[in-house]
Amino acid sequence: MKGKARPWISWMAAAAVMLAWMAGPKTLFGAEPYKIGGVFSITGSSSFLGDPEKKSLEMAVDEINARGGIDGRPVEAVIYDTEGDPTKAVLAVNKLISKDNVLAIIGPSLTPTTLAVIPIVERVQVPLISCAAGIQIVEPVKPYVFKTAQSDVLAVATIYKHMQKHGIKKIGILSVTNAFGVSGRDQLVKQAPEYGITIVKEEAYGANDTDMTAQLTKIKGENPDAVVCWGTNPGPAVVAKNMRQLGLTFPLYQSHGVASPKFIELAGEAAEGIRLPTGKILVADLLPDSDPQKVVLTAYITEYNKRYGGGVSGFGGYAYDAMQILAKALQGTGGDKAKIRDNLEKISNHVGISGIFNMTPQDHNGLGPEAFVMVEIRNGTWKLVD
Image 1 (cartoon, rainbow, N blue to C red):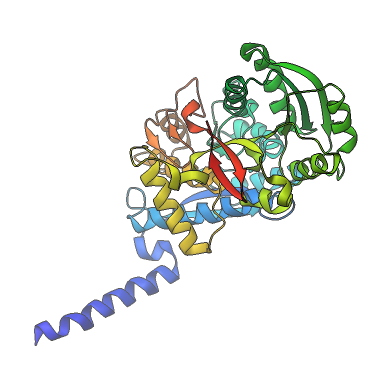
Image 2 (spheres, rainbow, N blue to C red):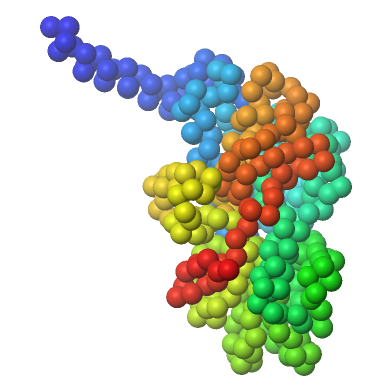
């Protein structure tokens, strides 16, 4: 009789767990949760960044709680939408700190919104792990500020190595006039001599501009071997279409800021042949089994697609990496923010979606050149290129 009762008991136990989970993580764990803040560009023109970041943070939190939480305590994410607006990012971060009492914050999605909130987290000493790329976020080092997105320093170096290998020596630059564009432009100018590259023309565009033919015509007049566009959607897609309209045939390189299916959707046929640096997530199926990131990438992609029905990009990986790294840093701290900060600086050999992280007191990004690969868009998808 006892044997026949077991399925019923198991069913009851499973139901109890489910009810407890529906009532909230505190009920399930019997302990107050560790509250983590999230600030992303979930809606607006940068939603292609923030939406997967929000989803990936929620996915990481569920995974951590399923593993038993952190030191017996569940993790709870409190997430706000910045809409890509620095003012709204400041309001959200202030609310997370003063009302929600979070232990750390993940995000924002953009360099301008991150730069807007850095003075706040530094003043109140709350650890922040940004999902934006601008190198000025972590250089110079700020004690409580970290980031998981690959820096534009590495992105520019990856592009220039590819150009050098293919005999490209004269380039034009077209960058967006915000903090992300300025940071990328500065790195393009700074590193060009190191790779024997001459910048023959520099142009800029506004984030909301819808026609860059005038700037491209000026660049064409200097007869470059290639052009580099530095921005995030939708501007780079406009540049790609304008190049087609003008009949320009020299190669177009884009930044890692457009490394998502959304760019291909926006640029359409004009995306064909565009080259850009990206994390390995877009070409995970092409990586050899020996690649140290392949297992982690495959598991993330499988779970993300299962939960959300597709749309994987490296941007979601930034938030996923941030939460997994933060989970390690939280261990043994009792929620002490200074100890969490100290532990973040000690993260080493963490194999993530964006690369292998080795944080130090001098490096609050912790990624090396191997975090990037060069891809080219062919037949509407990504292909690895040498």
